[in-house]
Amino acid sequence: MRLAHTRAFEVLRDPSPEDPWRVLFSGCLAGWRCGVDGTTNGVYPNIVALLALPTVQVIAFCPEQHTMGTPRTTPDLHGGDGFDVLDGEARVRDERGVDLTEAMIEGARAMVAHALAERAELAILMDMSGACGSQVISDGCRFDAERRYQRGVGVATAALLRAGVPVVSQRDHFTLGALRARLEPGYEPPNGALDHHETDWVRGYFADRS
Ligand code: SF4
Image (cartoon, rainbow, N blue to C red; front, side, top):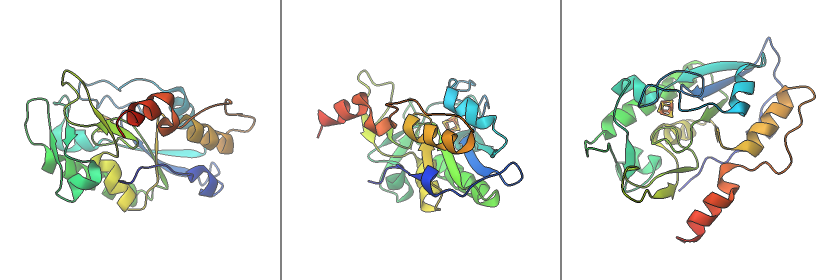
């Protein structure tokens, strides 16, 4: 299993308004109403701040909407993570049991093609999604009586990582703060900010299952 932890903020070049960082965002994080229910899946202050910076070129894409439209049923991974799906060793199904594996792989490939065409240097994606998750995703259907989780990446994230695009999640508050500090003069990240995999919830949930 390979997670998407990244120190991208340390290795990205210095940007300018004339030559901004080219950042791929999950469409919903960029404000597209492309969630399964036609919403944006919430608002995240670090993301709002990054989207507004002149040194960030926003590249948005939704791999699920690309192949399945909106609204749609909810895809979750069964038997592995996004890498396993790409390798034919796990499947994607919705809450009705319909197999969405091929649509998810096609959407992931389209996202990679868009990212490479736009020369994206970094991706900031919505964690927990079966497509865009990068730290923690559901282990089976999220609507089961007891929702289960797995450490791992979604299908589109796996394809982006294999294409060489580093991925950060909207819950990686330490990394997002460090990225903002490189872009916003005077911005100081909050003390104690953690990336998602470092939080008490993630550590505790998986400690109980290791
Ligand atoms: S597939 Fe990705 S971009 Fe589309 S709604 Fe889900 S998290 Fe957002």
